[in-house]
Amino acid sequence: MGKRNWTDQELYRDILNGGRSREAALQYVYTGTDWKRTLNAWVKQGGGTPEDAEEVFQDSIIAFDRSIREGRFERKSALKTYFLGIAKRQWLKVLKKSNRQLPFGMWFEETMEDKMEELLYAKEKKAVLTKVIGMMGERCQVLLKLFGLDYSMKEIAEEVSLRDQEAAKKEVYRCRERLKKILDDNQDLRKLLE
Amino acid sequence: MENETNWEERADAYIRGKLSEEEVIAFEKDLDGNPGRRESIRIKRLEHEAIELLIEDDLRQKMASWNTPQPATGILGSSPWRWAMGLASAAVVLIALLIWWQRQPGVKPTPESQVAEKSKEKGNESGQDPGDTLLQPAPTKDELPAIKPGTPGSITPDKYLAVADAFYETPPSPFADSKGAGTTPPQDALSLGIQAVLDHRPQEAIRLLEQVDTAAVPDKVRFYKEWKAYAYYEIGRYSAAAALLRSLAADKNNSVASQDRYEWYLLLSLVPDYARNQAEVKALLDKMTDPAIGHEYSSRALQLKKALIP
Image (cartoon, rainbow over all chains, first blue to last red; front, top):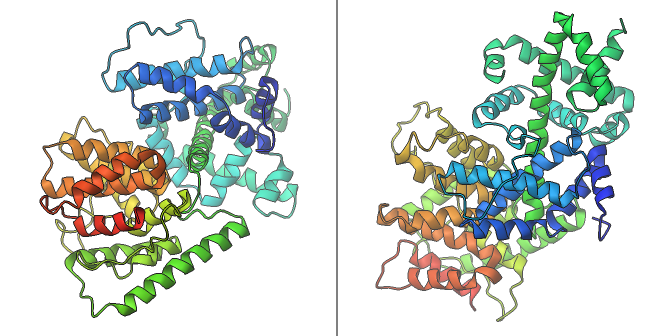
């Protein structure tokens, strides 16, 4: 991971900018912070298992990553506070899903503007999207993922061994068009997604 | 009106939350009077959602690898050094097994070993970790290959994983007996998920199994849990695999044979993190090797015990 400690500013910047630096930042969040320990304590207090805690932690990182990349984090709090706000909601979802009671004394901020649950897909929607993605080739999936993560065309060319950034640009364009066509041609799938 | 290329770029930025508040207002105002562009935005949103799912899947895989201290199971990684280490370790164990095998007088395969051979063939087709072939042919209940135990205290955390991997065989498909040859297997999420586990596509298996509406098929929840556990094992989420199998093993409604199987795989899911799970591993091994119990996997458990506790 290189660095020993990251500041909030560095984490925020590297996740927001996407590309290669994002992965190192998220790995630090996952393995180098004490956020998981705090979350584990909550989950344990609420009668959850270590597996519940791991599920909540991973779902929260996914929502946290996307939330920052899409500019939803307004930088009004520390990153840990923001992350734990997301995690609380994820934990509430797990409790609801398994018909378990919210532990006494545990409250959830209702004022949080983000609807975190929307950042993680509903099962049905995920199934349809998985089907759509399955219609793309594996190479296109990689290219689109890199594009979605704001890799520069030069970086994309390096990652998938293309001649240069122009070639990467063309391939990404072709893959995007292909995805659009799949969505356009499959109105039934679209109805399920909208 | 701005040209199409500029609009496309701005639309992408709009969908991906990269525009300022003022830019968003201006962009949406422009959309109001333009149904064609509104439709383009709808498609772009779906495209964005699909791409985000790819990103989510990728991040889940990465977290699984960050979670695993040593990628010994089929994920030797890109480093040539890791490759060399992996191959060297596999070669050493393979030689030990070959020597053992040559010394055995005519081992006859039992039905259990035939099943194992079948599942191994599948694993080899899909380019599995060379370590997976170490138990070929699979052990009979009474004559089992020994994992060289080494000297007391010599087993490192990586070796525990290697030991678990050497004993680990994905069970045969539960559909194999009920369906005749040539019958199309069921296409529901559970069946497809199980098939994905058998085909060594664990990430896809987990995704498919998570689509199973367990409330609608309560009689199949045990399959859902069991096969999800196998998929978790393959991606290195040993504690998650163990949790599922533990709950299955504790359910007294299951048949004795199933419970024995759940306990065996629970045991194997605990071994990679032996330092933490030592007490539970020991308790399970004691139970499974107790002759009074007549556990289905007693012989294997005995071999595993020897490998773990020299």
